[in-house]
Length: 277
Image 1: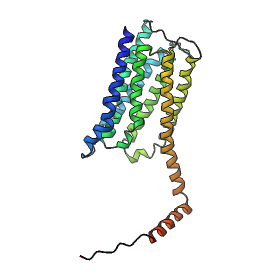
Image 2: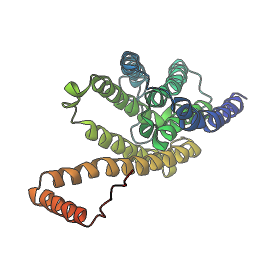
Image 3: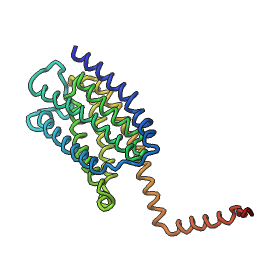
Image 4: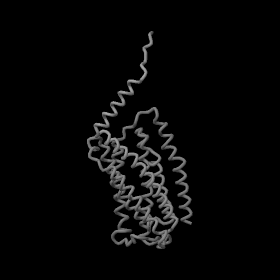
């Protein structure tokens, strides 16, 4: 009965995200901001980022000892789940996972801030879909087992979010600090590595019977493959482009050739005659 109710709630949340939040973030809010000046939200965003650093660190410190660290006793290779188990540790994991799922909804504010500051390119399909999936997966877990194998993904993701939101906090101080934040691309690499490791880890219950739901493994695995493709495309588009630009700007021969080509092309441009009044 509980699983059915939670499963119904998952579908409701997922539909709501797809048909209300996504159009709002990518269509209606940009239209609202079209003729308005960007909002200055620097201090609000700083507080928001610090709050998420603290929140992710808190949930990591609470969940890690219940699972893989301390007396958790989780099997790193393959950890099953008993959806009917109601011991104290399991209930604590479920409770913490529930509240953390709410935090994942709050993280949609990332995209809202992008739009309100008129940074529309950052409110991309990757950004919105990443948040949608990050909300849907925990609710699925609450219905069919939020502990077990998937907890490695949850813990690693929390740790990465601590670093990521701390990076966002530092970058909000402008160029004086941003020039020291050379490690942004490495953070993206770590995220991609996380998805690859998680995809492999979540595929283990498909071949090893340890009592973990195969449906949850498949859904999580497909989500990780999607993230690998999308984040990989983002990385190539962003950082390979920067590499090519650095090669061009650091090579005087290429720069001189560009200048010569530009000068030649200007010679063949039609000359506009002034019209007499």
